Image 1 (tube, rainbow, N blue to C red):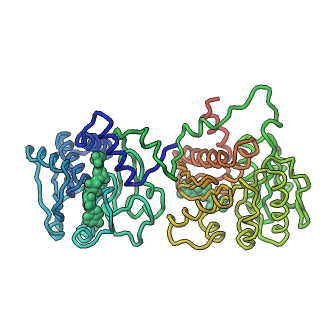
Image 2: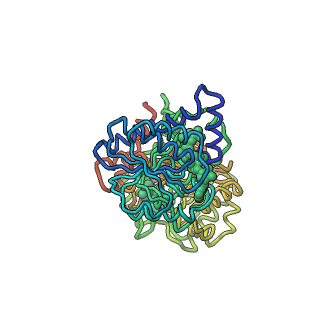
Image 3: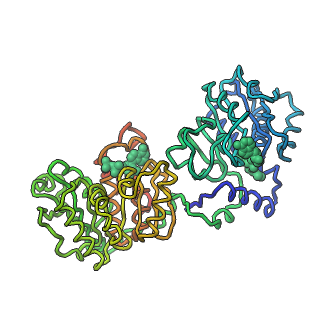
Length: 502
Ligand SMILES: NC(=O)C1=CN([C@@H]2O[C@H](COP(=O)(O)OP(=O)(O)OC[C@H]3O[C@@H](n4cnc5c(N)ncnc54)[C@H](O)[C@@H]3O)[C@@H](O)[C@H]2O)[C@@H](O)CC1
Ligand SMILES: Nc1ncnc2c1ncn2[C@@H]1O[C@H](COP(=O)(O)OP(=O)(O)O)[C@@H](O)[C@H]1O
């Protein structure tokens, strides 16, 4: 898993690399510029475009100067460099790169006042004014300049971070920094790129490797981690020779109601395709025909208002909530399950209406069996733990609650945050907007229940399920504008196969 670091930690990684690798600071900057330019040229191959490169006087500006030099060398001849001259201080590597640029015929324009940057003729802007060195909100000349750059409505590529964007911590609203089309950042994504508010600062981001010491970065202390494909491949256990249905666990899905039977069918289908040995759906009588017709592999446990799960020990995982409905009967069922599950130490997955029931019965939170998995989306999360103004605060609460209650919280969004009892925030990078359709969460719950039934720890079940769910969505979205939940369920088995190679 990739560690995600703060700006201060990334600066330490820069310093460590310079001190311990045979690379000088200015060469590291050159490497960063080369990586940026490679990606930029791939995106913008038309070398005839008018490009404005805006450079501050720190190392971000130094990057900008090195980028300008390299782009000129690559034939981007209609390029002008704007030297933002709002502070007296300049970094050494900025000075070195400026000297090198002096030896070329590159047009350089000094910006002593924000008003000097009004009527520029540019198709594209490269923003290298301030990067990860940002240590206070923009104001004065910087703020004015940034506002007039944004007003030009040009396509902006930001170097490492858009000017005015804090790489971690609460993103102030309204955002007043550079509004980039894309940020090409160095070595690691900024933690804040995974928070929805960052879309005001950059519509897209990508990471360019610049040769920082990976060992140092990986060993740095952090709460934030990013799942990589190999983490999933390493965790997935291949199916064994001489195995049988009993080898892969029995999952119980308590879901569905008269008008929401589909949720139960979708969760159960996902559970099957993710490989559980046996799946039982606990649904109202009215859904039996549909279940038998659509999912003949799934067993039924008819549910009425008096139902209690009599022998919960026979299930390795129990998921409750999709399409369940909020009622006193369902509240009692959930309560009995929570009590029983403590004794039997099974994995309990709580989703949708079961989360809504817990919101009104906060006393149940403290009684949740250790390693239970909660899968709220933003609204369900706020109903459970209170309103949050920012995603940073929401994730902080999720991290603290997961630790305090010794549970796993899967806070769902474009990038889902998996918060563990150990205090980690594990971010899932897969998934896309084609998946924004009803039923997707039901599928995720079914996959988590399936992996938990197969014997994976709660943390691993959540990691595997989120990654595979999103990856299936990504693969299907290559040829579609929308991916339906049923399509995704049927794809799960293929994704697992591709990831295990067996
Ligand atoms: N060897 C290195 O240190 C490397 C640094 N790199 C680049 O260096 C950047 C960081 O450079 P710096 O640390 O010099 O910082 P920046 O260039 O981001 O900022 C320069 C200075 O501006 C001042 N400042 C911060 N917030 C301000 C505000 N709101 N208004 C006015 N002034 C403000 C600070 O004193 C800061 O040090 C990275 O984003 C990256 O682009 C890369 O070249 C990779 C290697
Ligand atoms: N734009 C998106 N990008 C990535 N994943 C998405 C996106 N929209 C939805 N998803 C995923 O789909 C699921 C939606 O869950 P949820 O809101 O509970 O849906 P439902 O209740 O309709 O089943 C989550 O796992 C979420 O991460």
